[in-house]
Image (cartoon, rainbow, N blue to C red; front, side, top):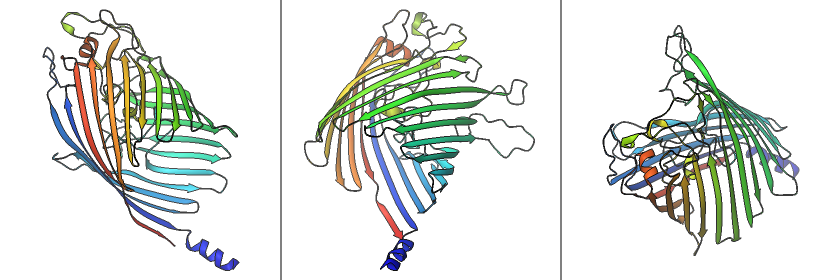
Length: 424
């Protein structure tokens, strides 16, 4: 009997799976952020398009070893050219004592994904070519992430890495520690990220790396009935132009789930902004000279799930790249009236963080309605509609539609079957 159990365990030491993920999302936009030239009036024309993404993921694992390869095609339906790339390709070695090392292109997800996340709403997503070292066990998780990127295998042209490379930075070092408290549903995380950005002119004397860093903490309590989370991050160092960065952000969110069929949430985000600016006549945004950047940048997070679904903030920029920060106060909820169906809503009050010279802080009010229905285990259809009443501040800082009304709707089909699985 004992020999048969050992033999069965040995037969299932190797596992190979293959999954396909298909997503198609049709969008309709009226108003928004049209391209304009200097002096032209912004016009928010009605736009329609369909986005698509297909991923084929193959995963192999056995005790102390796992490898993963994910091929991806993404883009707009009808777009010329090929959008095929490798989204993930990594190998992970695990020790019996909880230590591990993982190397290759990998999607990173930490805490609520505000600072580091795979940005799955974007069809292309975000992955990092990095070395990840860590320990996980006894309620503790400690990770170190190291990345160094280069444009090509240079022999005699230095070590310059400019825009156009496959990664958004030249070098990155991140430390993350998480602890789950015993006996209570509370977890706490600490994060430190140091990012080196290429600066200066190529083959010039000012060719250099400018360093910027983020550090902070994240807390989450989740008892099932009540969930509460909060975070705080500081940002410092220098940007690519050598200007000092002194920025910060804080967030808090509470969710109440009286039943598995309905729940409510309320929260507030504050991201600091630049204070020195001017709004000259003609509704053009001009910047006064200043030597400190106070606009917080949430860098490599999954931005779509924060700051309003219409993605006006930290996905698109303000005019001239200037940012007066953001305040986002929101309330929402969901209900599951029948099996497989989930309906949700959110309201956002959006305002700048800094005081403006001759216009109000308020950017607008956004209302979001959502619905999703699980057609089967592997397939879900989702849809949403967002409506924003923008203010003069929104129009001037974002060059948004001047009728004060911004509308956006989408419908999405997600199909993710497992097409192959075997053990031996």
